[in-house]
Length: 235
Image (cartoon, rainbow, N blue to C red; front, side, top):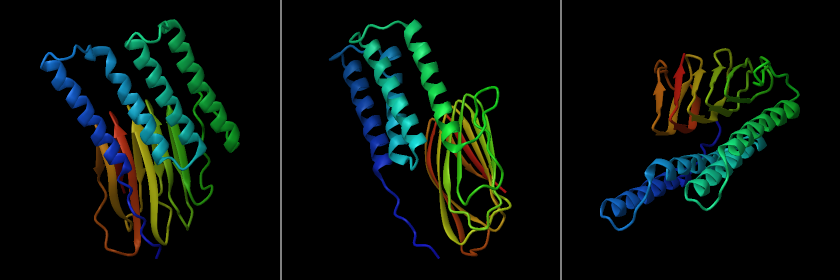
């Protein structure tokens, strides 16, 4: 059986510090010590925090690129809202579209997979011992039949991912890192797998609908974040 890996508290600490910082700003504003327009100054912070969490979590180049994009886009909007940077939405919106398009092209060309008409990468069934899926403004489906499943990484941003592992098997423990932002992820697992969820929901949710299995030495650990999104695991 594989050695169990330590769970890093860095992401949870970052979320906690961000909440504490925003709370202090709200307190100072309510006391009249500072004047803050919350309507445009704080929601970009959510994007920046999501970007940092994605970079810290990701084990792939694609995930790091997505995290960097969220971080830079959030910083751009924050500077615009604070009046430090003067840039029109006519420029910001096309830049965001170009960035998303470049990520889709980079991912599809690197993995040698086709893309459908909406620009969403299409998966192939039963390839490899790990699963890698990313859905941005669209839908993504993956199915694996490997006898030695070793985990993977799933990302859904304003889209949905469905991962079917019911025909897989594994020995010991496998870890799947998930990141759902304004999107949803569904993972289907075999009935003899034990599921352990270590996710952090931020205005989102994690739901385990699997049947409680006996300890047969097969454990799937799901780690990650659901930011205004959700994750569901079922048999």
